[in-house]
Length: 57
Picture 1 (cartoon, rainbow, N blue to C red):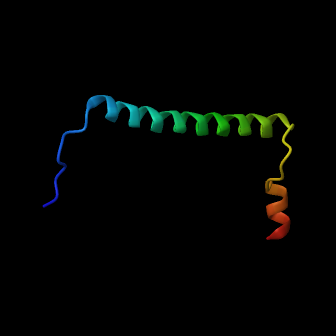
Picture 2 (cartoon, rainbow, N blue to C red):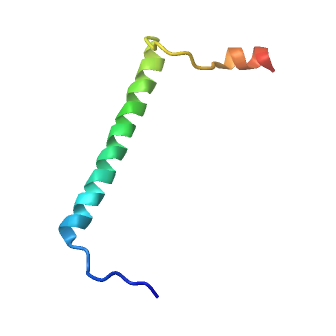
């Protein structure tokens, strides 16, 4: 059975986790920003609305 040769240090573990959490925080901020943009009506991209979906069906 394969096992690690040496124990990973706490600092390396914490660094990896911090990187992962930072990436998640950035994506969450982007999602919130996009949602606010859509709700305010200032969005510059096209997204489907319920009216368009009903017409296509």
